[in-house]
Image (cartoon, chains in turn blue, yellow):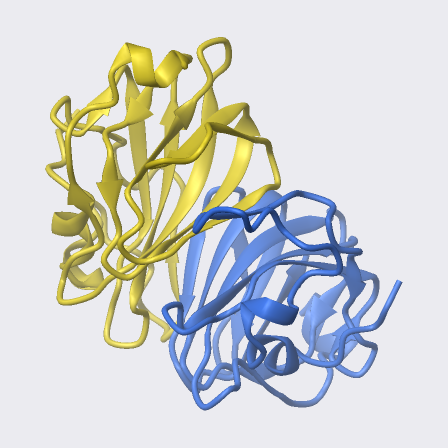
Length: 159
Length: 159
């Protein structure tokens, strides 16, 4: 399983190189089958605990965002970070937390949608007792979707 | 349950009016809880069969797309249509079909991601035997995400 460096690296590439196996491209409509690319792991520099990233689609000439399914094991979370152009999260399973700097930790549940505006320092992840998966729709600006910061300490996480 | 007119109508409004109940807005990060708005029905002019639309998020100053979970009963499908700026579908459950004009009908499965480029005339929906749900990430251009056309006949659908 290949490490992927940062969401920004993924987000700044085009559809063309996005898939290990070629999609069905005999028609204008492209279908990228589930499982056509290996899952990636969230790198240790930017995540605590086991985090699996399944890229769904990348930005292209028409789409200024990239989409990924991100799965956190219990206790796993992102580092503190900001999104230069904002990000939408759609929780698909489990139980998670999201917290912005200076704010309380908030519970997120399947079906919840979270909007993080540009420049808001925050983290998100699973709770300590349950795993959590979300689809992330990350707006890309100047080829970048995220600015990574320091890790979330256990004290911050469990507070 | 309120009818919603077109994806375009929904897509051209801002976050501010998007929710029947106010989200938690004491912080910059906004959480829109599952079930905070009633589901809508795909209007008969643009869909065949029962189609339920759960709006997830709308385009805003930073996000040039809107997101919706769309659920088709077996046999239900969209009318023929194009997307002026393209659309991503992420299949979340069931079994479906997608077809572009002049192309064969293609099966779509959970986890598949479909990219429909701008201007490609097509339809999508459930198969005749199973329901299907997908998240639609619709790019919005000049306040519009879709141009609707004629209905998909039973002959076209079952061909």
